[in-house]
Image (cartoon, rainbow, N blue to C red):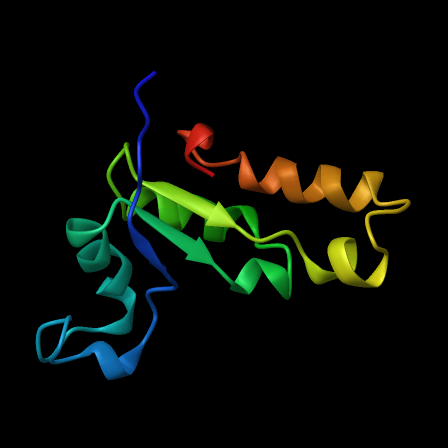
Length: 107
């Protein structure tokens, strides 16, 4: 059975990476596009704090190749505050938004 290992980092939006990773003068709006040239996956920590808007998820997908994968953290309200109990509506909203990208299998 063949296995795929993906290598990435937790996040891409780091000003401190200008110079060591991002070319000098790179704008924050271009970080993800440049990141996706080196890595094929990323963990999205911001989703732990809030369910992203559909526009945000679609924007991520538009700035990355079709084979790029996002590992979205479930919101803390689901995992920590409610401890996975009575979360059907919150989970449905999260999954609906995560799957709103054109190639939703990537999230």
